[in-house]
Image (cartoon, rainbow, N blue to C red; front, top):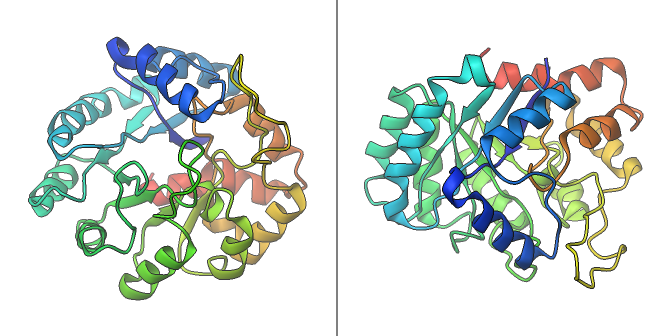
Length: 282
């Protein structure tokens, strides 16, 4: 089984505009158009069984509709292979009710994006949400490190991650991008070996420049294979999850780079799907 633990889609009416806007700010070319149909076609081509959709709530008022849509998507997961997490904003004062509602309706987890939500990860509002999510047995997947569109924002850098781990010791916290996009040295020195999950999304492939942009191939280089293997083995392959950040990385190419990275068969099987199935309770 292959589970892509980190993907994004948008409602069909919004997908073209949303992906175009994000591609422009990131100066990066998308692989898919952001619709669920394009992701399902990619999954079929790459041999991916399930993809986890990670919606981001950028305003407190968005959570209701985002979570309604997530629950609707999850009623068809067996046919589509798409499993949606829920979303919440740090300014949602009724966070307890929201999280209980998500858990009570079978949702497996929630997504937090400190940079898009303009909140430090160890802010008390996030601490309360993460703690309550743990109480409700929800996975919390967090964008970690910098963001390609906002390179100077350190809302989810290593010191803030360490603060959360020290204060809460969350059981089901997943740090995206191998613990911190473009912060892999800090991740290896401070986070690797801690009791936390990591996903591989947007870490192992070069970024495709958007047409007409001046992105240098050496700008924002991917995590080097040697460092990746070292991090996996220091941390434990049993706590690493395959993720792509689709539509921003190719599912097929991401699987290929893992298969050619030097991982053992046992490590590869665990990362590509075994660990994700265990975390999801499948």
